[in-house]
Length: 112
Length: 114
Image 1 (cartoon, one colour):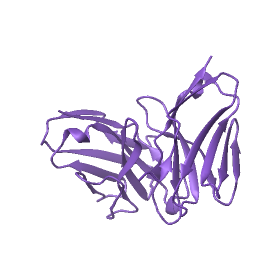
Image 2: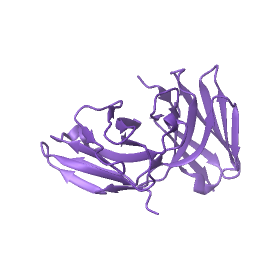
Image 3: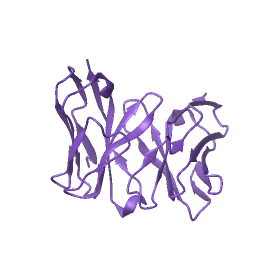
Image 4: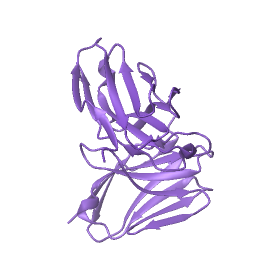
C-alpha cells in the first residue's frame, strides 16, 4: 500500500500563474517532508522541506504547506516559469524510519 | 565536487545474468539508499544502509542484494536478472540525522533486461 500519494499524475499551468502540487500520506509516524524536482535523464534534486512542528516553509518562489490533521502537504510555486517544468516528487521521512518514502510524482508543465 | 556517482549509466542484460551497480559518495554521508523508478510507480526504496557494514530492506527488496563494506560505497547486486527488473536505478546518500535532512541523488542507471 502506498504510504505517500500524489493523486495528480500531471498538471499544466500558464507561465506567471501559481502551480499547486498536492501530496497525502498515511503513516502518522512521518514528521519530516521533502519535495524533489526531477528533469529527464537526471537524478532528483532537493527543493524544499518542512518539519511537522511547522505548517509552512518558504524558499523564494517555493512554499510548502503542511496540514498534519489531514495528513496533507502541498507545494506552491509562484510565479511559475517554463524552467519549472519537471516531475515533482514528495517524500516523507523521520519518525525513526531512517528512510525516505516517495510518492508517484506529478509532472508539471508550465506553458509559455 | 562529484557528490553521488553511479556506475554504469546504462546496461543491457540478458535474463538470468548477474550484475552489480556501484554507488560512490564523497560527502562522508552515513546513510545510503537504492531506489528504482518505474512509470506510474514513483521512486520505490529497494535497500538502504544507515552505516558501514549495515543494510536493511526497503519496499521492494526481492531479487536484489546489497553490501556496504566501505562507508563511501553502496553496491546493488542482481543475482539472476529478470525482465521485471528493467528500470532506472537511483542511488542516494544523506548525512544521517535519522532522516531529518535531505538526501542527495546520483544521476541514475538505466537497466534493460531482455
